[in-house]
Length: 606
Ligand code: F6R
Image 1 (cartoon, rainbow, N blue to C red):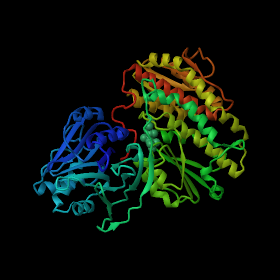
Image 2: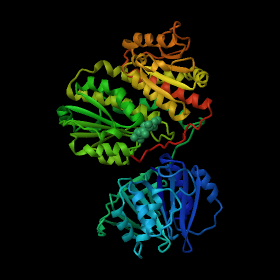
Image 3: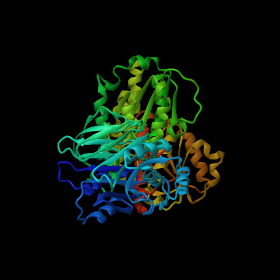
Image 4: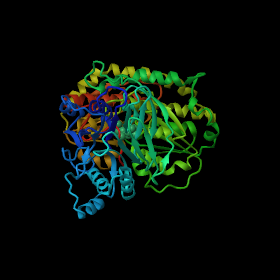
């Protein structure tokens, strides 16, 4: 995981350490366990490190007087070794000549460490990063790119590294295998930016090179040279990208998550407007793909976490709209599963970030076999959008809160709209859904208008130590999403269960200390779910119902929800109700909502 950054000043008067810190702020979505920055000053490696977020590092660096023109930096999500200054990057080698930042995992680091220890190389951290740093230092005989290339031959895993050496203070070296890394030359100042994600570059336009596997870049303020793994110079095909001002602000809300929850109605209206054409919904991005859609025999949806839940919730609708079997795959399991030979599969890959390592690995292992691959993604310059045949933007703008809300809702809405698009191509009846989909912003406004009452219940339920979330039909994956939200930001144990499964075991856990949150958004299964809730009530379990009618025989705690004529799309307001409920529980408990412990916005390790 982690975010890596580098900067070389050319014609601007930007200060390297401060510019790197600005970049790190925008990369913190990739981890925020610790942060560090390094440069070469008067022939020695200079570094600053802190455990914790980038703000702490900025405070440490603030008053420095060093004249520098190059720096590298890192924000960490710990994989190897705990949260300590020693394990913070940049890692510095045993000769004190190299500073290196790293994203990814060196899989054979123990073997390499043993080898280096046998050669008398000393280690000060528990990280795999120190191993590659020391390996390069050990192999260095005056030509750094040769040492890096030799190290790449010996390391296994996926990684991106950026490093500086005291012998070449104005040059940055970079290399990658399976992890994203881009080098951008600012079109006006000619300053060079290197990052795990181009959106962290300063506002400007850039000629950008996206590093490919096992390439090494030698970067100065005047030249960018790319070497292939055999050492030959490669043509660097640059693409232009424009980075606009980072508009993220809380707009008066206490947390980004709360603001992002409230953006969902206007976001849905924007998406519906963009997709509405001739009284139906369609995707211009797929206008040349009708033949593929007509040939389609299977749909594979691949995703992780909330993005996976969006797939689970939409599955039934996609099947109804295409009369085609739809399988929703957890990306982290996909590439290890035995797949039956399937022809004519359309893949839908869902990822807010487009950089989730599990999702990319799963997609890549079957990429060649897909008739058509469609990314639903919120980052138009991500690795995923560059690798799939088609890309459908989530249009959610930047989602800052680690816990996904608006991007998730956009994924779900776009899946429903994709279903309509497919059914149009396949000439399958869909008319009754067009109006109901158009009502989604209203349904969202309705649930947002109930925030005060949801908050009141959240504050009452915040004292419970354990939660069940339950429902039937598509309300079951809605429960999974709600339970995930609660776990992420309140750190409370929460389990999602199909209501009918309760009696097959989990009911043993019920007593007065367990709260069950039930979603009654599916008319046809609501009576059965209510019976299951009665069984909980009979065992002194506490029950809160999101649904239509009152149920005094079970509980007084009922939050009325909007009825949209049809159950399918109820998933969206019910998920938002779950977001609001979790938000106010976490707030009541005083948790760090936008950046919860142990998490990162983009999970770039498998
Ligand atoms: C939950 C959450 C995560 C992500 C998951 C996939 O609130 O944000 O579960 O959904 O890590 O991330 P993306 O969608 O970026 O691939």
